[in-house]
Image 1 (cartoon, rainbow, N blue to C red):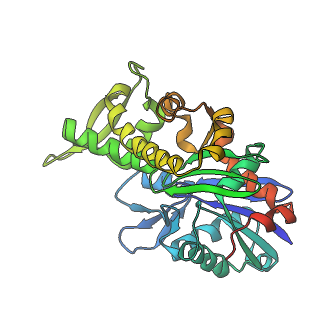
Image 2: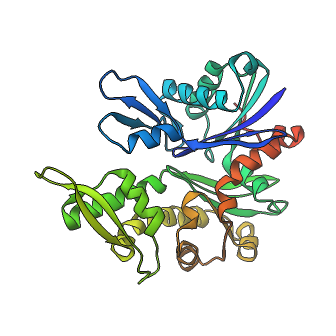
Length: 330
């Protein structure tokens, strides 16, 4: 049987194939023609088309860890599977493992399951993201480990070991919330509304929590009641405030989770620290900011942290006993 792990994220989709490694990493979006509502492009092609504006609008079928547009998700994954040469006549022989948010059951798994059924997978399983991260980051989770994965639409925070989940939460805040906060802040302070693609560029290219970082980027937007686009120079220091708003929400919920954990169970964490991963983890100054507010040493895995979950899911796919023990009972 062909075994694949699918990390269908709000921003990026990653697919791992057992024996071959990561086969695909593309935006989880499709471009729809504004006139006839037909899908024009998918993944990276869609994102490039969407930058032109006007001719197509971008749609994202996953939000906050849930499949909100099943037809869109099916069309998107069908194209991705074709790209990695898993044609329709092969999928009956595919075991697909979907990554799902921490603590999620029922409705959320059902959405992924229906997508998998429509694609013709012979077997469908589910795995909570924290377990996959532990394997993907090669952590020692014989004893409790504390992980935080900040994705585009969701943040998973969990304390767990091979004995099971001690405490975990999926927080509906992520990188896309930072993008929106940046856009709102720029509009309020300058009167210029910039598209989300420009907000994302600001976050990724000049976003920093260090005062006086000095980086800058010119973006384009529109002023109310004015025709044509205007250019706007934005400095790193101008967007610290909106970046911190979503991050402070994540910290607040993380502290609430920690307060519910018995001190004797949380004690090992003070020695081992917090393992940070996800697309937002590379934000300059974030590690220090988390250490300051959580009182723990924080370990950032850099680029490895961005693909750790799907890598770990792939490793667990190849260990039938391990997967059987930790997969979501659905």
